[in-house]
Length: 386
Figure 1 (cartoon, rainbow, N blue to C red):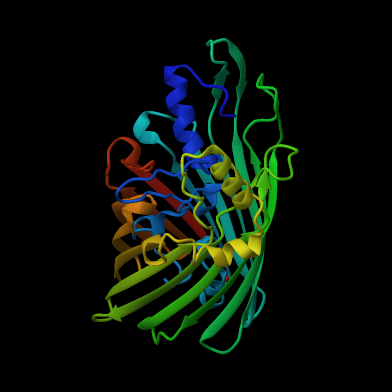
Figure 2 (cartoon, rainbow, N blue to C red):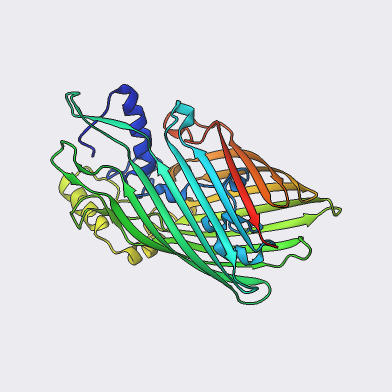
């Protein structure tokens, strides 16, 4: 796919969309401060999908349970007050560039079977809009509408009155380009399967106290877009741990502080040496490596475990369990992407429905501009049952 380009207007759209969806770069940049960003296929699986978490700096592993738990930690749903709930979220993507047909839409929900077990499910759909392809001479090839989706089902079970565990299975489909687009390469939709494993501990009493959770997500197969079995890429396997604490101030006012730490379980691509034969051999070894081995290697790939961690923190103030104000901050080391942004949000809770809004404060410039800068996200959750 790198052998074609678009006109100026569509090139901007294609380039930004490709960064968000296509496989990793085969070249690492070597500077005084080494920059080696870990890129994967289907990175939409790591986009924060719901507006509540989006208003708290993308924190949600150990916050109070809601219908969007499938995207963060399904083990939370056993502690939800309602027997069932369904959530719908919409996130415009690259709206800051004036694009209107690139977006992430999600649906998630759960059903408590009894006091100790529950089922969960979710669907994510990522549209990259309409893209006109051309060759190097500017001749029109064809128009494509890339899209990706993932669907999962999960099961959770209480271990005791304070702890729950869960497992979810996921199918992933990435349809970027299909067929021969004039480059001589036959492309196809990529497919993969993965699993999440999680635990959640809730020691709160009357809504006040400590919660924590741990999640291993997207543990699955590689994904490829051609018939070349050696030309496959890693999906974004991830380790996440979170903690939150809620303080009941006076019965009507509550405040929650939350912190999440995430580590991508994908090793960095080998740094370019400038010697073609060496770089080619290193890259071939990297791309043909095993999935399980890659999870372990991600902790010892020479780039430092500490700098590969993503840290996000958030605060949520609630009045009378009905009105909520939120704020948060997300941090990523400059050598691994340099994403740093602040968020704000608000929520309204009724007996049968929750409405959440979030806004990512504009940050960065050029290639460091966040795709969600200046974007308002909306989420609605419907609560069913007693």
